[in-house]
Image (cartoon, rainbow, N blue to C red):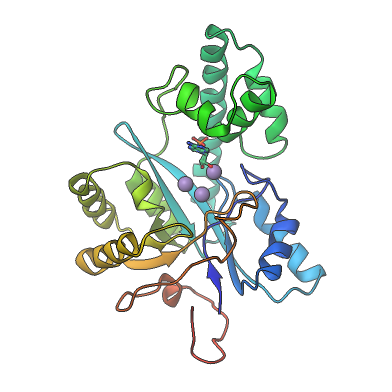
Length: 287
Ligand code: AMP
Ligand code: MN
Ligand code: MN
Ligand code: MN
């Protein structure tokens, strides 16, 4: 059984529509997929509709990836198995959207000071109906030949410490975890090794996440050394957290693909064991 609990669509900074995303998941033999767009749940109904209309053999887990502010650091918390109708959740996401708009306007201003005009409007056009993210700014900077690659756009202008960086103002980890719980979901600390924290600070984050009521951490990603995976598995055991798996798929790439290389070390509790619903596992082989 293939399980992938972290993916993006055009409803945020992914390249595939929710319908194309679920079709690709089936192509890649994924059995269970969570759609977890940045600060929006708009794609879920569209993904569900595509599954239903095309009778796809795919179980969709409703999800969201919420940006949190932890001092200067941006931490991503994935909510899984959420009730998308929950009012506390929709209110929080509306606030995050507002913060994204304000940040986008300021980012545009700062880029203009760097003699790059029109970026806010350009990024907004690329985002279309989807949630505006820095990835749209990066794509615009590349399209307009201001930067060679997305990575280059982040390094020069968009990443923390770069020329146009705007300090973030997202919800706190505490609030995000409690809203995910209010919506009946499980709170998962996304990609723990992407925050560029030393082991000491990552452990502080894990303590704080656990104290906030956090349920799980992402242990398995597509691109990862065996050492990284086993360290994260050990953190699950040390801090009493369950384990999740997710490609963080945005766009077809050879090294990041839906369902690719996702498996858990032994002796960790899979977060899906705590979901309100999950398909039967035919031969007992979960991953
Ligand atoms: P935001 O949530 O608006 O700050 O946008 C963050 C998104 O930008 C992440 O989810 C990634 O998809 C993308 N991103 C962040 N850093 C980089 C990078 N260095 N290169 C390419 N994409 C990045
Ligand atoms: Mn993203
Ligand atoms: Mn993320
Ligand atoms: Mn993500």
